[in-house]
Image (cartoon, rainbow, N blue to C red):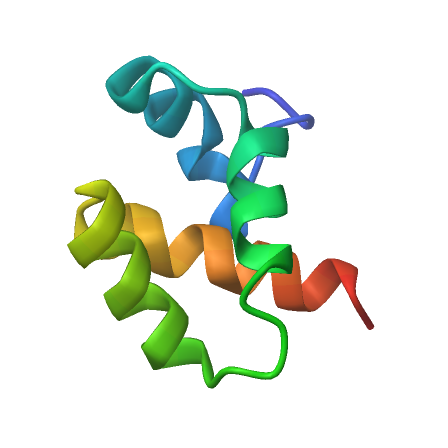
Length: 69
């Protein structure tokens, strides 16, 4: 049993990078450009403009908002 298992939104990061071919830093910059928008509005923008799945988009936005605290 691994004590270092990644939990929460970051657990999606390897799949996001593999599926969409861009590093997490790219997506964080995209989200930076949507400053001031509501969580679900950013999720919708990532899904619509960039083709991300709901879970992946939601995980990215949650991680971004958690890092901004």
